[in-house]
Length: 375
Image 1 (cartoon, one colour):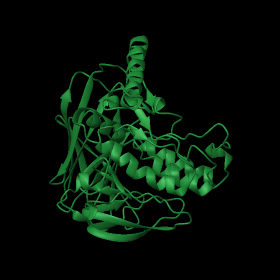
Image 2 (cartoon, helix red, strand yellow; image 1 turned 120 degrees about the vertical axis):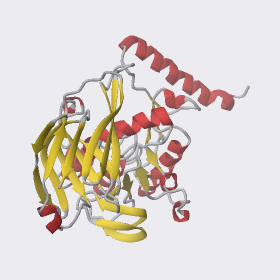
Image 3 (cartoon, helix red, strand yellow; image 1 turned 180 degrees about the horizontal axis):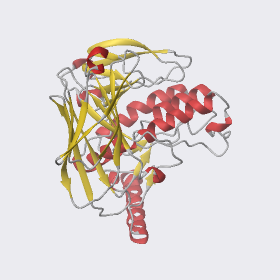
């Protein structure tokens, strides 16, 4: 038996042994990070792509590498943000954080001999821009957590090539310079120094800019603005995305925070989505899965799986995109229906074109069992 035949298999057994040892010792879900892995290692932890460099080419190449890992069945994968060897300049580090926020495994890491690169060492505006990239990840944690549950039960990747979601679109068959984050978010990394625009391919459907809600109709390619403070991110029409918008020190203190729902309508004025809920640490936690849907001017939330997990968290804001024009939205009203109780809700028209409807403080439970009717 040659060393090369068992090298990575040995690495898998190390991760497996570590996982089981920590599970027995802690009685909680272990976190194991490995660089050596084999088929089956995805059951025991995350991996990273190894000793990359602080170069634009390595930032670019991280995307197809991680897309390949997801398709191969290893969804919890990432690359060292900023590059392991070498010292990234401010622009490279910022752009890497903006992309890394959408890696399934997201961390900054550098060699002991490289210069320190904590975000606060670079001064403004860089510190604030990197902070905003990191906050983007924290805002999306409810969506990300649900994606990881889907990956663990269905085997689908978290970070997906476009052909995974659009298999009949021949344009995306070899496209690896943009990707889907789950089935609802399109990400176009900016991987060239000095770039202020990006060429984005939008598959069939409606796509809305993450920040402005400007709409793009696919299939088409468009040149979009991509200044330093922006990475092109787009919500897919027909999806409902749960987030948490309050900035905290870490995810633990976000646990009791309220949720925001982004309801991104398709051409037929419908949308759907879901959220997975559990205690976040137990090996055999009780759980709850809730399905959201919007159709015929009614937004509803129903429990589709429940093993007894209880949560008092509520939804503090609902953002509805693609419902109508400013004139139509201004004339709307809404009521929430929970059981036999109806409550009038406050509505605000927002967005650059005044075509985004915000439901303020609906205070309905994230666990479902309610409807909101728009009139």
